[in-house]
Amino acid sequence: MSDRKQRIDAMFRATTCDTAEAVGPAVDAREPAAAPAATDPRWQAVLARDRAFDGRFVYAVRTTGIYCRPSCPSRHAKPANVVFHPTCEAAAKAGFRPCLRCKPDGAGLAELHAAVIADICRFIEAAEEAPQLDELARKAGMSPFHFHRLFKSITGVTPRAYASAWRAERVRSELIRPGASVTSAIYGAGFNSNGRFYETSNEVLGMKPTDYRAGGTNTEIHFAIGECSLGAILVARSERGVCAILLGDNPDALARDLQDRFPQARLIGGDAAFESLVAKVVGFVEAPALGLDLPLDVRGTAFQQRVWQALRDIPAGETASYSDIARRIGAPKSVRAVAQACAANTIAVAIPCHRVVRNDGALSGYRWGVERKRALIDKESAA
Image (cartoon, rainbow, N blue to C red; front, top):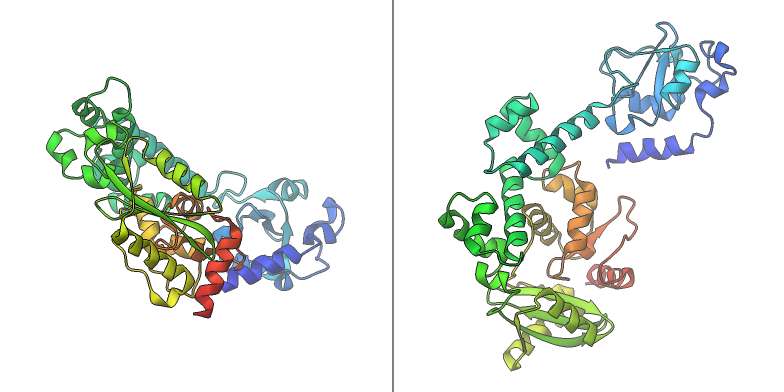
């Protein structure tokens, strides 16, 4: 949220008396207001046509008898003729009728767009093969360019990436279904050839399809548990790179967590060489200025991987809000999805989800405890 929006929002919350209420009964609602609209913080949202305030209030114009949503594109009225109402019902009760241009009593444009994209997502999920962009745009009733931009702004990924992520999820679900073969899982997920799937299977599954179906059988994962100022720390590495860094109070609980993630994998206790990797991670926790550059085995959806890469781009000693990350990955409306991606991260400190805070700078939840999050931020700030 920008500084301007934050100021308006704070002033809006501080407004304890609605202008329409200040002027008395509904029959008098079109009389001059006790407080001019120009001094009301909501007027700034109207001048900015800020969609963020749609649904929070409406404004009415006495000279026309019309009420509008804050983002209405119509020409602005004189502030002296404007009165605010908390809801459409309040404005109608005061004798105003809805604007035919912005339709404040109907679904907002953002809601309509979200509904269209949700329908397109269900269409992609039900398709035998990934639909082409032109087909999706026609179904949405938009041009390909506008549809592509809108889809990415709402979901955080392109239509193609969404389709790929959905097929990957279907493959994973099919592979663990009793009696399913690898071939049937590939074709059942919408891949039209084995070759196209095997080109990306390592990124999708992190291992061979047959090994994934067997719960990680034939996959070796080396791990070791150490101690740091934050408590116990477990570091695990597959042949591709570090696949888990877990924090906690109980070393046994961390080992069980790793086993639950890879139930059939061969878990191998770290040797002397591996212990040095753990020491490197612990050293970074204690002295962030040392930096941490490790090969990572990152497993997640296309959207999650974009979020996690954005987290790795946050310099040590700095923080960013969930809204900041959403904007950086080109999906400003996907703040909640960004928070979920942060929560799904299993590689602590190397993918620094602890550097993400709320818009007001306050600490939010952290997979390994808010106190550890505070300690990490403090250490990095002091480095």
